[in-house]
Length: 269
Ligand SMILES: [Zn+2]
Image 1 (tube, protein in one colour):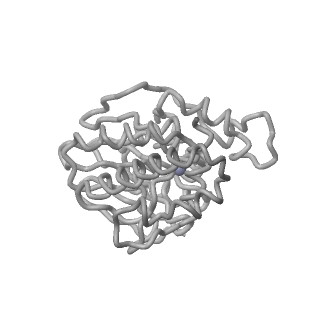
Image 2 (cartoon, rainbow, N blue to C red; image 1 turned 90 degrees about the vertical axis):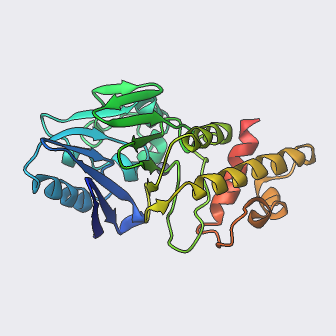
Image 3 (cartoon, rainbow, N blue to C red; image 1 turned 180 degrees about the horizontal axis):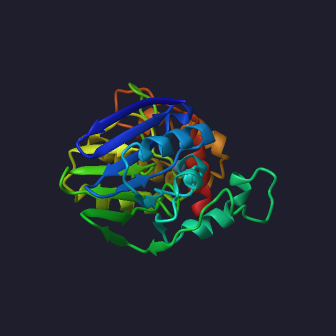
């Protein structure tokens, strides 16, 4: 079910109830760009219906990364005239993580369900007045879309805001901690008024980027300090509390993410 559709200037945010995941439509005078495509077929179809109501072609379909809640609905949105754009690691990441996308662990990718990009890019790609930026960390293929005219950043899961009134910890279980730190530091150099996250409500300013960086850097330091102890991820998660890493008065939205991050950190060394 679609829970909310909000338009701010030319940015239309479509929020699905499932996982509170967002898709975005960017309105141009003669065409549309769609960013992400939701998870449930019925939600993706509603997104396609909404796009159709503008009576303009979907010229570009962009995915912020390979996780299914962000790309599984592509097949409902991609028209003959639509060009799909992804970071260059998108397809390889899908292949290497296919066990997650297909629980039956089939070796074959279902091309009817997953659509392949026509354009891929490495670091940066200019599309009209939008800037597509490679921001690995949450996943190897994660990107953000920057709209300089609006000082807006569509962040995918590079910056999370899942639950209103709670803190969404940065999540790098499918990616890499240092890559995420580097990506967030790169984003700090941009002039940003609003962050449109892959989940939940928009965030004002860059405060969330600073606090995510504090959490990540503290977590890396603390796990490093304990490295000689040979502790399990669960033991480490008990020893290194979220509060000791996070400088925020908000309660964590999904505390389990902390242990998954620790598990990933242990495997990085
Ligand atoms: Zn994700």
